Image (cartoon, rainbow, N blue to C red; front, side, top):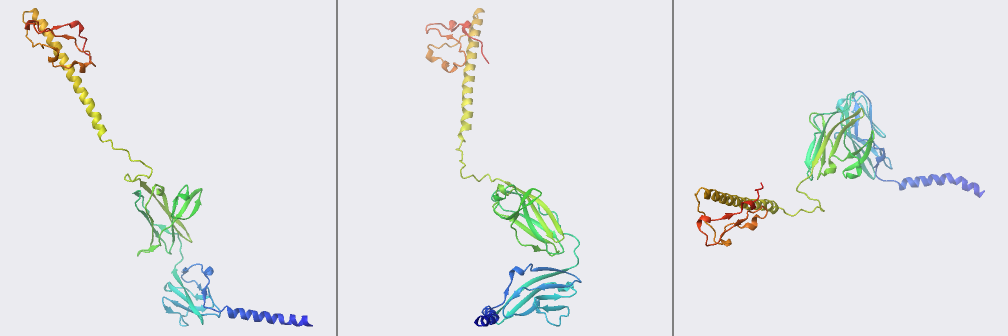
Length: 349
């Protein structure tokens, strides 16, 4: 009997526990982030469209919708506020704008924004407008940048890729992808900027570039209808003013070329002077010997000693110096010098 009573009270106990849990779980509304797929929405003209607002709370919140700051009410005939969203019937181009859903209960409120773009049926993929991106050349340590211009009826996803053999060499990387056996890294870039002509621009900036940044860069413009791409190259020149930490600066050699030029010039001048004096002396003695046979003696000054002769013969050791014998101090002018002509070797050029 006691067991039956206990079984009878079990369902009631469970209900009370459930109610107690609900009471304890009361609080302000919160956004279920896992249910938020996109905050940028696209609707087509003439179609029905629904905007979901994943906000929950206990007790259930009061939902309020607005467009561009104006509250949506019953007077908006094509708009219906539902439990988990806003339904728009027969979408028109004027329905584009910023939509806000706001949830409020006794504990607080929270709101979530959506951007709706209304277009006609898209028939083609985005186009990348030439000439961008352009090939770039820069020196090591400088900054380089690429621009990508995309023409699309809806806002495209613009990404920058770099073709590399080893992705670990780059630091400005989101993740790596592989296409047809080639490795590409997805680079971090700025937000898309919409131009007045309706096209979109995205800029990639590389700071303090190094030789590893050289290579092929690709800009991708993608929508649900397809992908378009254009490519450009970056060439990095080394900075001649920069030295590596372990590179030694060679010593100055500015004095070596001057010394290398002066020494041969001085030696050549000495050799030419010695050869010229030797030839002159040889011609002088030959002329004297020839004149004596015709009784026309040419008087030449004769040194009285070896110390008075002006030529320093040891400097001509590289050339066979003529063997000239000076006479004694008592010799007359008619026998000014005797030359052993057989001892003079031929002059080598």
